[in-house]
Length: 174
Image 1: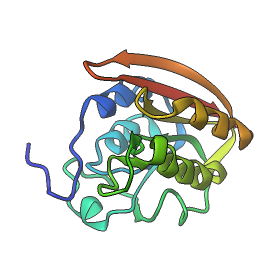
Image 2 (image 1 turned 135 degrees about the vertical axis):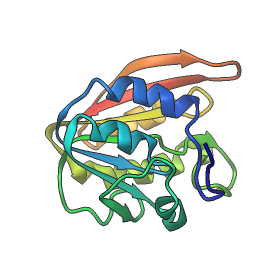
Image 3 (image 1 turned 90 degrees about the horizontal axis):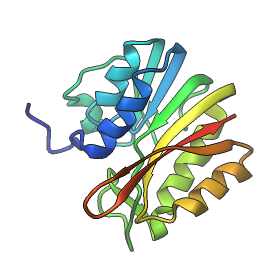
Image 4 (image 1 turned 60 degrees about the vertical axis):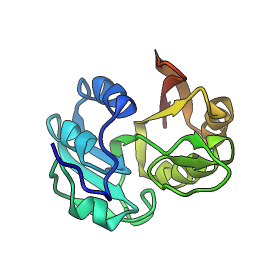
């Protein structure tokens, strides 16, 4: 399968999220940072309406896993709707500067995920959920506390050990 230079190909973290969300269903879902379209396509199997966003227009235009209802924006800033499920394989790597918007999370791996949570908060229906992945290499406890400060009830739903890190899947309920 060929991936555009503008698209982050599905990796361990993508498949980790996909394993969880493929069992979910509802009327509407939002995939923030759709990238290749892999998670958006997984969601489209069990949700009536699925919207994908990405800050990178070229990534949306050249999706490997073609989907509909795509919006080029930061987080969900351009979306004025609420969803049953919001999903994000967010950039969580702790970096001094953000060179790659697909992977670099900024200081402590918190800076970019914080902006995504701020944006996504208004897109989660009352009783709805947001599922996002982070890493043991980032300050995930700070991210969880921040989500809770936004009024979301969080829980770690799964962990996956890799060679150099542990992936952490978090669910935040509105």
